[in-house]
Length: 110
Image (cartoon, rainbow, N blue to C red; front, top):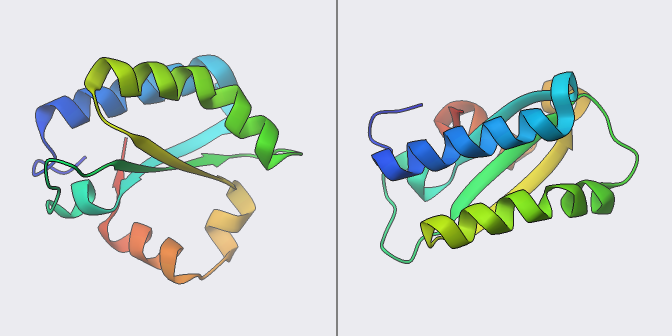
């Protein structure tokens, strides 16, 4: 992860990844920080934007629910809102949306 990311955000991302590994095991393929924190442009009211790449899943809503307790706990502990997007590994590898291009260029892996 980029050194321009504040230490407390790097710690949060480390805890997030550890929690996701506990939830998903080897289904978790990657966790990326993107947006203002990844670019080094965060303000005091900025949220954290995270992309979670999973090998596969059946229901996006169920994965949001599955990660809800972890994400809510970290948000409360660190006093910052965490926005997450969950995608399948195949989408990460094969899709070419502007969001994915931006994350590939400017995002940081946790």
